[in-house]
Amino acid sequence: MLTRIDHVGIACHDLEEKIAFYETTFGLVLASREVNEAQGVKEAMMHVADGPSGSSYIQLLEPLGPDTPVGKFLAKRGEGVHHVGYGVDDVAAALEAIGAKDVRLLDRRPRHGSMGASIAFLHPKDVGGVLTELVQASEGQHEGE
Ligand code: MC0
Image (cartoon, rainbow, N blue to C red; front, side, top):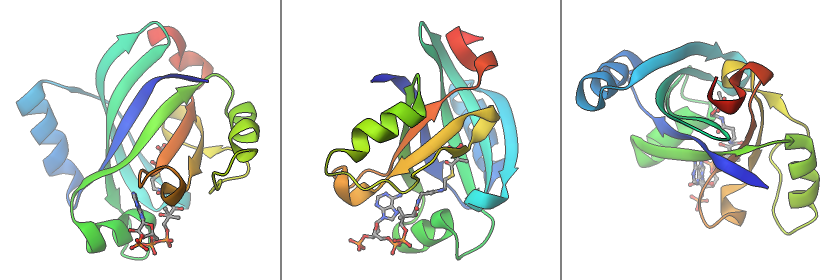
């Protein structure tokens, strides 16, 4: 069902500062930058590598305010890994299969994610403390394009 690690989401206070850090420290290249009002974030995708089932990224996340998922996370835990996003071929089918197990779905239907992807979150308390995201890349993002 899972095809790759699509991205690791990292919560931060200052997006510009962290983009510069990943560029200068690891030589990563900024692939996209978006504001996602529905998710309460400003985010940047830093390209890491391409594989047979698609690309992988570091996703840097700055909250749009304190009362957002990433704002609350920062207040409670500080900067660090916020979630893991796994690639799937069909996010709706994956949600149906996972929903049939004892895992709470935070999204019953896919939502809009970075770079045109369809995404859905699983509750961290049911995934060993890891906020988990399923990512179906947009057509143009498949096969390392
Ligand atoms: C909260 N908890 C986490 C966590 N966030 N555990 C692991 N990883 C995280 N990121 C834990 C808290 O420590 C707490 O545990 C419990 O979950 C409840 O947290 P809360 O602070 O009271 O907050 P809630 O319950 O209001 O919300 C937590 C929840 C929420 C995960 C349900 O953040 C959510 O729905 N997240 C999914 C959407 C999201 O994160 N969007 C931002 C990224 P204790 O033990 O203290 O009770 S958007 C994104 O990434 C998009 C743009 C993309 O990829 O394309």
